[in-house]
Image 1 (cartoon, rainbow, N blue to C red):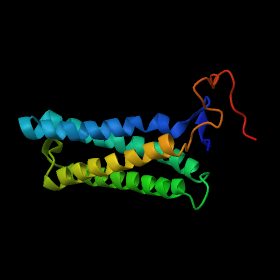
Image 2: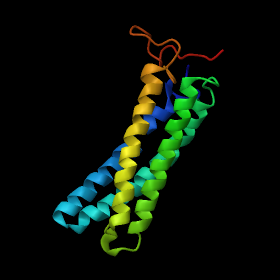
Image 3: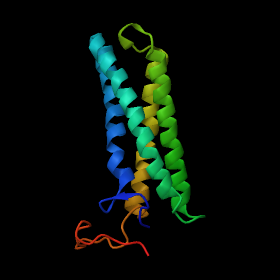
Image 4: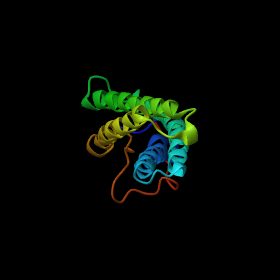
Length: 162
């Protein structure tokens, strides 16, 4: 099943998701470093990473939904895709709650609620990422119909949908 939302012959959604995943994971690393060192700069950095990650996730999500609507109904891929999208939505909500819990705090220092939300979001994100991998690697969702180990460059031979 080929992706609907493409740029230069490649699906847009998988091009965008590394940014929010990396930013949000880095926020949790900064929180852990903050807890270990009590250096306020890490709390501030975590808050900025969360904000940027939420924005990145909100930009990536619509492209995933566009592709999901093309997945055939009553298939395992459709069910996993829905769960993948809803799980990632939950990740964004949990990180948003974490960010809001820091809002107004001195130097964006996270309270217990902020940390619980962030750490729980990472656990959900790992499951959601596995589902995304299952969709692409196992079920071939978003993979070009002309894919193969010797397929020509998508820049030289762009696929024209029928």
